[in-house]
Image 1 (cartoon, rainbow, N blue to C red):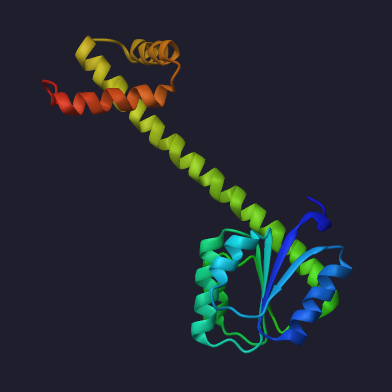
Image 2 (image 1 turned 180 degrees about the horizontal axis):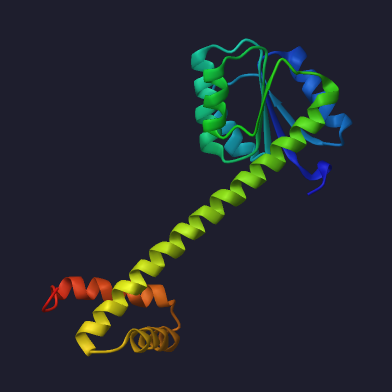
Length: 200
C-alpha cells in the first residue's frame, strides 16, 4: 500500500496543531487526509470516512478525554497514532491496552509525522498478525479436543481402534465435503443428546 493510497483521519481540536500534522502527512505524500476538529460524534464520522489510519492529537488531555479516545481505539481496529503533550505511566499503559499503535508524548513536529505513522502501521499489522495466529492456534487446539472426543465415542460405541475411528471421521468428512472438526462436533453433539454410553 503506497503512501498516497492511504486514507488518513486526523482528529485534533486545535487547528494550528492539526495543520502541522496535515502538512507533515502531505509532505510525506499522503493525499487522502481528512481533518476533524470536533470530537463529538467522532465514531459516526469514522464510519463515514473509513480511514486506513487515524492520527489523534490531544494537546492537554484530561482523564475522560483519554478514556474516550482509548474506547474509540478499541472499537475501530485500525492503526492509531496518538500525540499528547503530557502523560503518566497509567495513561501510557492504558494506551497500550487500548491498542494504540503509537503513543507519542511531547513529540509533535512536522518531520516526525511520517516515521511515527509508518511505525504505527507496522506495529498494528504485527499485532493483528499475532492476534490472528493466536486465534488460529486456539481454534486448532479446540478442534483437536473435539476430534479426540469424537474418536473416543466411536472407539467405545463401535469397538474401533483410534486409527480406525479417525479414518472413519476423515472418510465421512470427505464424503460430505465438510471439515473433520465439523463432523466430530456433530458426533459429539449427537452423543450428548443420546446420553452417556455405558461405562462413561
